[in-house]
Image (cartoon, rainbow, N blue to C red; front, side):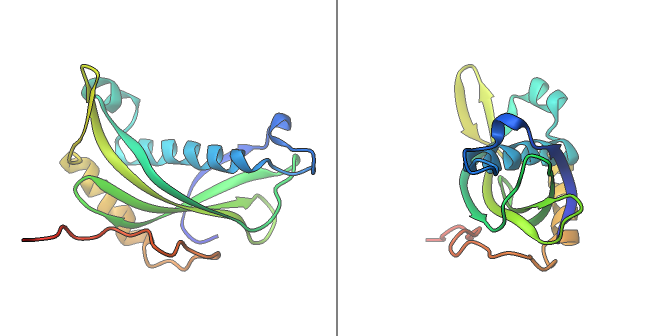
Length: 162
């Protein structure tokens, strides 16, 4: 799989549908848990969230189902940071099956950094150390070739200037 290894999980029996493979909603759960691992990796961990009220919100997700995942599989997830700006991350995740070739699914996400304070939520710039960690991941991974199809329209667009 392309990308930087990030997360893995055993497939839980209750995640398997009547066709004998992973229910579609659980691909999203696996990507969500991998996003948590990404947050931990760049400094948006539990301590950061508790002390600042900062976190990531998912704005958009595009998911492609490519191969079946079964109960005996262990899902492995890699990430490529395709773009980053002061508040957003455009990330691509690939879900594989440990010991098996090919990508089972891929997902592209647009993530927004927010601050949650006193019941209010507002977008906020990343702190400098998080921006630096994201830039490193971007430079290490953005040019890596994807094994599956990407989304057709998700991208970071520069601000419109008047």
